[in-house]
Length: 140
Image 1: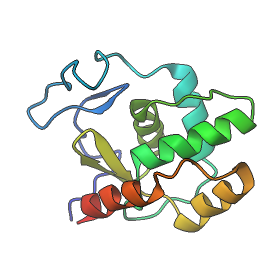
Image 2 (image 1 turned 180 degrees about the vertical axis):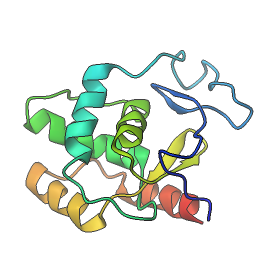
Image 3 (image 1 turned 135 degrees about the horizontal axis):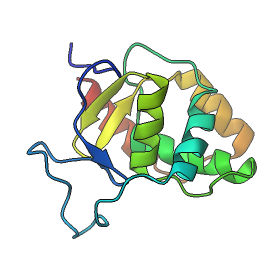
Image 4 (image 1 turned 30 degrees about the vertical axis):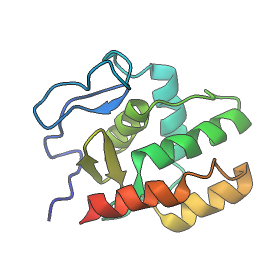
């Protein structure tokens, strides 16, 4: 099984997400310079993720969940922006199942809980299908 948890060694990450397989951060091209995730963003992601039941397998990509955390944060007076790396850092701190997939990660949280949260907080942008495809690929 390739699924990783907090107890396993994960690749380094920054605010953009996980580093490349060669251990280097992504180039400046599409992504910003490598910087640590901002603690305020990590706190928002922690508050959002802590409401979701953990699962034994990755169910959503970190990129999808970051958008869910942003919507949740806006509605609850927390950070309106959460970086991919902040979401990954929060998942690590909570000990959730994490499976790196390039810059993103599959994160193990309840599909039912995520969908219920979306209904309460308004649906995130129409990225759901694309992000689930990425996560499904990560789960293999």
